[in-house]
Length: 558
Image (cartoon, rainbow, N blue to C red; front, side, top):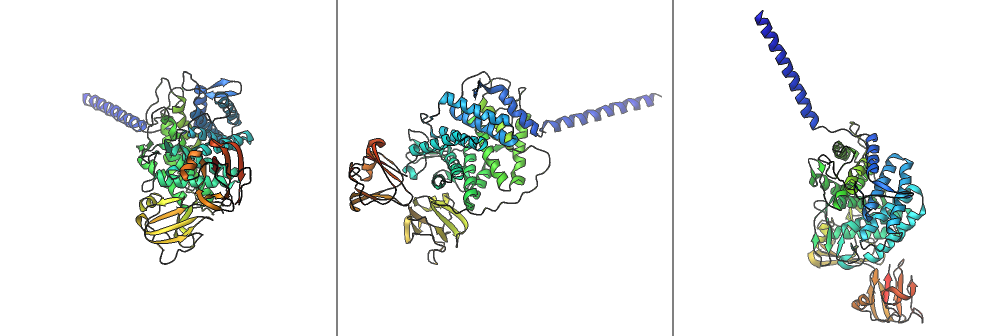
C-alpha cells in the first residue's frame, strides 16, 4: 500500500515537472516571436499616430512636435504629409485624402505659399515631392503648380558647375549633398512624367550622373552623404540617402530602360540590408533629423521591390521589420524609431514615431504565406529627347551594361566609381553637339579617339580600350562683335553674375552676338544679379540688337 502511494506521488511530481518544462519552453519560444501584422494593424498604426499628434483648427492642420505639443517643422511636415499619402495609396480611404488637404493648408499657414525664404534647398524639395503626390491623388492643380514653381526656383539657385555639377544643400553653398540631389532627381522625373517636358528628364539624368561621379561607391552600394566646396567627401551613409538613391534609380530605369539604373538600385538595397541592420532589423538612427529616416528608405525601396519582380526576395525582410516594430509599440500604439526595443512610455516625437507607420503603410501585411515569385519586368527603353549626358555601352549596338556620364573629365578611378570597368566600352550614344574623347591610358594618356555622334561600334582599335575620357558638353558662345566676330567665350548652363562672367573672361557690357545650341535659352540682363532689362534668345543670333548690344552684366543659360 505504501509503495503504491509513493509511486503515485512520484508520478504526480514528474507530470507537473513535464508540464512546467513545456510551459517554460513555450514562453521562451514565444518571447522571440513577433506578431504578424495585418491590414487592420496598418490602419491602427496611423490612427494611433493621428490620435497622438494630429492637431490644429478648422481646415488648417499639422502634426505637433511631440506628445506634449509644439509647432510643426518644415521638412518633417512635408514627410509626414507623404506618410498620409502612403496611407491613402494603401487603403483608398477618402479620410486620408481630406487630411492631405488639411495638412497642406496648415503647412502654408505656418510657412506661407512661398518657401524660398528657407535656406535649405532639400527642405523645399521634400515639400515639392509631397505636392507632386498630392496632385496625383487629388487632381488639384494648385499642388502641381507649387511643385513646379519651387522645383524651378531651387534648381535655379542651387545648381552650378562647381564640383562638376549637382545642387548645393543650402544657399550658403558650402556642401553638395545626396539629400538634395537624389530627391531632386525623383521630383524631376515625376514632373517629366506629368508634364512631358523633356528638360526635367535632362536635369534628372544630369544630377544622377553627378551623384554617381561624386557620392556613390559602386563597389559596395553605399551612398555617401556630401562633398564640400573644397572637394572633401563625407562618406557617412544614412537609410534615407540609400532610399532616395534607390527611388531616383528606379524612376530613371522606368523611364529609360537603361539597365545600370536597375543595377544601382538593387546594389544600394542590398548594401542597406547587409550593412545597416542588426539581426536583420534596420539600424537605430537617433537624432533630431535622423529619427524618421527609415520611413523614407522603406517608401522608395519597397516601391522598387514591387515594381521589379523582387517581392519574393525582399518582402519577408520588410515584414520582419514591420512585425518587430509593431510588437514593440507602447500602450498608446506608438512605435519609436528604434524598432528592435520596446517603445518607452514617456514623451515621444512625432517624427521619431513616423518611420514605422510609413513602413506599415507601404509594406504588404504578413499573411504567413511565402510570396509567389513575380516575373522580372523587362523595360522597353522609351525614346528620350535631350539626354543630358553620354551613354557608354559594354557591347556593340548599344547593348550590355549602360552607364551615363555628364560633362567632365574622368580618370580610371572616377570611371570605376561610376560603374564603368577598365577597357570595357564598345559603343556609345552622344547627344547632338557633344564631344567625347576616349583615351587608351589613365589620366588622358596614350591614343585618343574622338566621337561626336552615336556610334554602334567604336572600332577594333578603340574597342575595350577606354581607361579615361573627356566629355565636352555644348556651350553658348558669346562674341565680342556682331556676325560672330572678335573674342569668343563659351559658357555651360548656369546662372552667371558679373563677377562670374568676368572670371570666365567676359568683361562688363561686351556681347554683340552669340551661338546657342538647339533647345537652349539665354537670358541677358542689363544689371548685375539678374536685374534691369532682360533680353531672351533661343537660337543663334548674329546681332543682339541696338538695345541689348554691349549691355550684358549678368546672364542665365538653361
